[in-house]
Image (cartoon, rainbow, N blue to C red; front, side, top):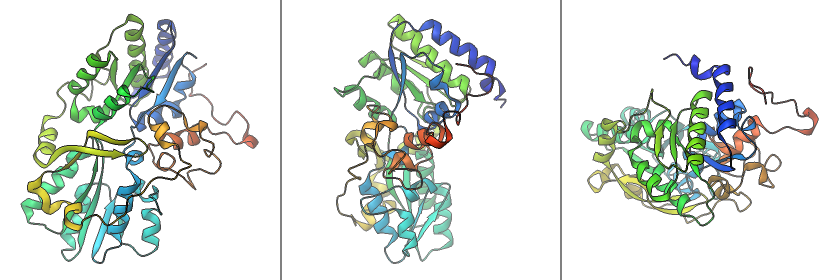
Amino acid sequence: MNLAPFRDPGIAAWLIAEIHAAQKHPWVLMETCGGQTHAILRLGLDQLLPRELELVHGPGCPVCVTPAGLIDQAIALAGCPGVLLATFADMMRVPGSAGTLFEARAAGAEVHMVYSALDALALARRMPKREVVFFAIGFETTAPGSALAVARARREGIRNFSLLMAHVLVPPAMRALLQSPDNRVQGYLAAGHACAILGWEPYEALAAEFGVPIVVTGFEAADLLRGILRLVQMLEAGEARVENAYERVVRREGNTRAQAQMDGVFEVCAREWRGIGLLPDSGLQLRPEWAAWDAQRKFGDLASPSAAASECISGEILQGLKKPPACPAWGGRCTPAHPLGAPMVSGEGACAAYYTYQYIPEEEGPARHALPEGLTR
């Protein structure tokens, strides 16, 4: 696919000019994907928008919203004799209540980094005498792969494989934000890759109920700016509906085969979100008939209840109430090398995005982060 038009500085400049022309009132918009957060800051798009058009960052990083208690459970499982825990690289340094998976591995626990649930299944296939547990995190984007891995394990009779479930769903989290008395978000950029699986139909009820416009967007400059422009146009016109600005990937019905794969293996459940709390119908768990591949049913709860570091304000950041530089620890006591919380660790975390693209040490001066070529303020 030719992405050049979506990265064209001239097209981006035209869209920015259209946004400036369309915006007459102050608005607060939220992108619900950590990948979009990083793209916006990397490209400097937030610095090119009207001053009274504010972008805030939602709970769109699956690593960031995984609660400390589940990480503690993963660490405990990895320390069990005969157990190998497989996980994504981003999860290795996310703090639980008393350490990280990286530290657990350094202390002798069996922790392997993998790219997918199918990679973890391959480990179980190669090592039939080991119990392989895959730490299944992610939104609708990665859940089909976890479901497929379990289905293949049953078909092949592989019983030494299980999932530690941490999958979460985007629309219920958006509903919780919209219902919050502290909410100030007036328009949403929906995550394109999650909508590629789920479609945008489930968002239509949110738009209608809360009178909020939602636009599905991708990750290139033109994708994001198109989404922002449509939100501003709808807000200025007093309109609230769902639109798709990621037509090359997303359809209204989504990927029905992937949905069927998930529905056959998983069911909806309440899920704890880091810094936010327990959200009803916001997670996925294995159906009872798949209990043999459920790590929590197989091994039980091995970790005590825990909480994230008290100094970390990830909950306020993930709800769009504060931005990372508002945290007293950000850029000082909390850095990617020494993170206090998940948003500074993850490749999709908002704190890491601000640190990478906007943090300017005093000795370097304000010229460290130039605007993208072809774009001007």
